[in-house]
Amino acid sequence: MDNYMEQLREMLAFYSDCQNKYTEELQTLPDGTLRYVNDKQRTQYIWAKPESGHIRRIGINSRPDLIRQLARKEFLKRSLKEICANINTIQTAINNYREINPSAIISSMTRAYSSLSQDQFFLPSEPVFSTPDQTLKERLKSHQAWAEMDYEKNDYPFGEFSQYTSKGLHVRSSRELIIAELLYKYEIPFRYDQIIRAGRDKLSPDFTFEMADMRELYFEYCGMMDTENYVFHFLDKRRKYEQAGIFEWDNIIYAFSSGPKVNTAEIDAIIRTRILPRL
Image: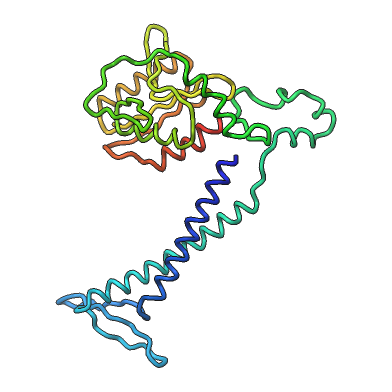
């Protein structure tokens, strides 16, 4: 779980930096607020400027720079309110965080429980929590040899949209390039386009991982769900996965999108919350 704490601290640093920059910028912007009057001819923008205990109203349609400054000021003020709320939330999460140490939890139980072997307490597919003697990075390293073994790969020709990752891996699309680079970021060993057998069918999930229980976990990115033929192909492929004992609730993860853009934040969240804990 050290990775989650690191991300919380990074978020806290990011929002604290924004808070300082926005606060400094606010001090450079003019006093007052922007108002407007709508008549039949046009919208009249008004600068409500405080002067000697009262508000002076000045028409500023001819001063677009001042309109922009007042708009920027209101944006910064409202953003700071949200930023401060996020800082308080993240700081509370950091202060209240408790590391889950399975050995310590078991040791705190009565002797009727603590005398049992540790394998009595865990399910085979249960996420493994980091402990002082088994950090997240150590767990990931344990999968490296598996990832580097020879395995049967999909030999379907690469198309015109194929790309090479920063480590020289040839992938079939820019979407898979983004996913591979995120996996590199988290130092997660994986196999790309590995062939698995499903009866007489051969399937090749985009990415394959070795879980803590030594089983394989598959990740499929389905990026053309706005195309009818693609959807039919996906449904057929999912049926074949299920016939081979590969189910969404157990050992395969799907991510869906439509159009050319990739929601990188969503993929990052899937890696952090659904893949990493199971490795």
